[in-house]
Length: 412
Image 1 (cartoon, rainbow, N blue to C red):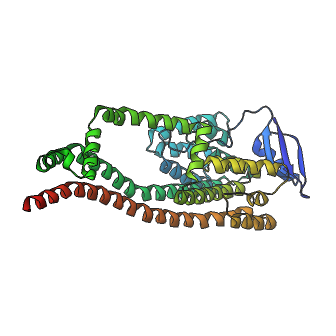
Image 2: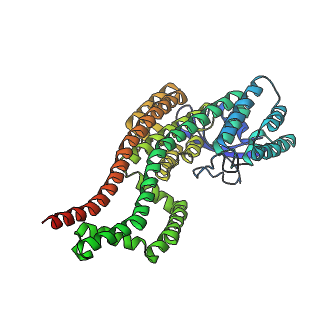
Image 3: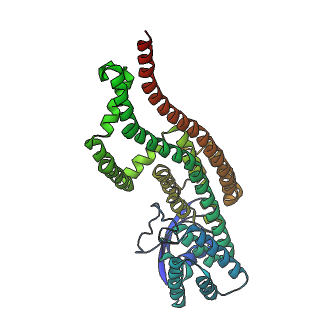
């Protein structure tokens, strides 16, 4: 039996701190509920930090795809609902999975469960597959005796999150392809076609000096792109700069700076903010519905938002809640969460249906993300077309201008 320290809210709204002995964290939370206390923070004494508030590794980063995890979660929920013992269900699913990486993980999970480890603790040993959110919800399901319902919530949440990411990525594919084609076409024209045309134009006009200024600029650009310095920069300088940038943005300071920059780009800011609110609301509702304490829910959810600026804001909210404040009150001070979120959350807190209300917020903002992504596509596509047209137009004017001038001079 372990000892846990806790911070909880009494029925009268006062904050109470203390210690409690229990076999597991879930049992400690259940015991606090039995005392009519609302758990805010429950931590095992001398336990190692769980990493709440940090980036949560997404499923699939260790060879396990999100699709495989969703299928596993769905089928696991069905088996548990049908009364199949956990260990037997795990063995069946282990044999059915086609992913070699996932089969290896499930083999270790089965071995741990056979050795007497709780299912949630067995999952927690594989953080690259089972996120902190996943583990916490399973732990809550074990404690509350509703593991099948929790697993169904998890699968639904994962499907919605994957759909959201897929829509954003899908909207970016066409503009990215157009941009890449534009760059390749421009490079080919400037390094192979323009120099040959430039030589012809120079001979027709009696030298480079006689060419129009815009043609001379184009030829200078072409010459520069064929220089060793430019080629070295493209082959070595650019990859090095990208690598250094990526390393910097993986540091806490660099990540925060980059995310704050993204939140200043007009259209991008809207998509990032609405996606963050949708993801926060969906995960928050799932964790609250599973019986996880509100502070632990906020800290866990903050790490899954995907934006360091909004994550920091939520972590500040959790500190204020531990001091006795309400989440709706803190979100009213937010510079990223719209007032309607705080207002709806306040209604949920008053009626005791916070998880239901915030689930409605998630559904609303998921639709808003769809609209914002569609708007982004409608803005980016014309810009890409204008860029491509401008490139072709610049080259055409630079080539045909001197030819027309030469023909006019010859006619005179």
